[in-house]
Image 1 (cartoon, rainbow, N blue to C red):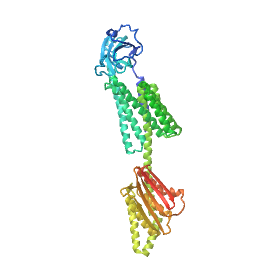
Image 2 (cartoon, helix red, strand yellow; image 1 turned 60 degrees about the horizontal axis):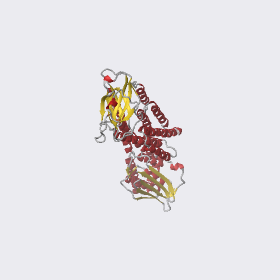
Image 3 (spheres, rainbow, N blue to C red; image 1 turned 90 degrees about the horizontal axis):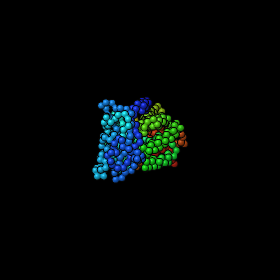
Image 4 (cartoon, rainbow, N blue to C red; image 1 turned 90 degrees about the vertical axis):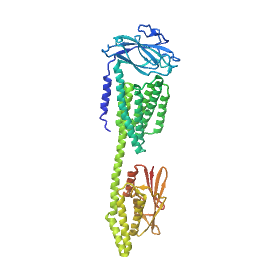
Length: 558
């Protein structure tokens, strides 16, 4: 994962902060009063007796609130000022006693369907924007949320800039969100290709939740949301934040395992649920969840650094970078920038994991190829050929007909080897035919009676080539015949929903005690390499002695 663009992204964020325009207005304290008189909109009204705290209205009654605003700079000609409001309720806007806009039907909310939008922008007449103090008066009603009176957000600038800035910001953020959507889909398909990699699925879900969070936050620019639905939107955002705040530390805990992981994750999820269910304002709830997420993730990653786990140090840098952005920018900007850097760290860990898996797979292929060549060389090496040819000479001298059969069996085995040695999986019937042929040859060579037995074999199944042939060779090499001069080999197949199991039994007398070198010999290495090549890590292999000889068990998990 190349992180060379991270400093560039940070530089852009800092430039956005440092290049913010100087303010053109100064807002003063807002006062409130329940009632409805038109003269309350005038500039020179004495409002000293009005309430200075936000009030609670009932039954959608009319109330007014007035805010003194100082204009610090005269607008340019042909470019009027505008005012952007974030206000709960339906209202009319007055500037120095002049009606400049209407948002809904104040006082009629109980009888008329909801109208207006939560975020509205109004143009101010040029002749009312001279430098000095002005009065913003709003006649409003608040039928749905009577405890949310007043202005929750106020911004003043050139009217066209207020409109354009929101569209430009939203367009960039939607491009940003699209990148996370594509990333989410890509890693979802990677997971579907290998359903054991749950870290890939969690990263995909995190990217999708982040994509949805951006849409939920910036949809207000182009979708008119009535204030009665605003709390629903905030609740959706809180749910998305809850999911992200849990999954990110959970992902890090998978990458950097630590003691008592399940217990600590359970406690953390309880803390998150408490913050989510608490009746706080949205910003405080989101802040609490984000802070909890960062602290838990920080602890997990620090543990990974302490244990010198791969990638932990770089992820720690992304966490520190995200918190530094949080101190330098407003919450709505730091939230997305911080999450982006954290997801970048998650992506780095995932890319390292994918790289390790790819290298392990390539190594297994190389090892499998090398062991396959060694196994083939073993069958044609001078020692094998000399013993086989010596036995062949003896049989031709004693019984020419059996000598010819011996040659035919030898040719048949080499022909089967030639057919399967470049394949990854072959039908079990072909593997059994190779084993039977080898036993025919060894009967001629050693003059021992070899028997082959099968139980519940499903001939539709496929296995890596040569694995049972290798186990058969080990059984012949390391076993002595029973009293009746026989050695019996038995292959048993068992299948369930969870796994497929092959049990390969050798009924004979053990030639010598088991040693470490015998267990790690070329034959067993070949079997394990072939299983890894075909089934990755979804297999188990057991090879152990029994009272009757030897037992090999291969389990392949679904």
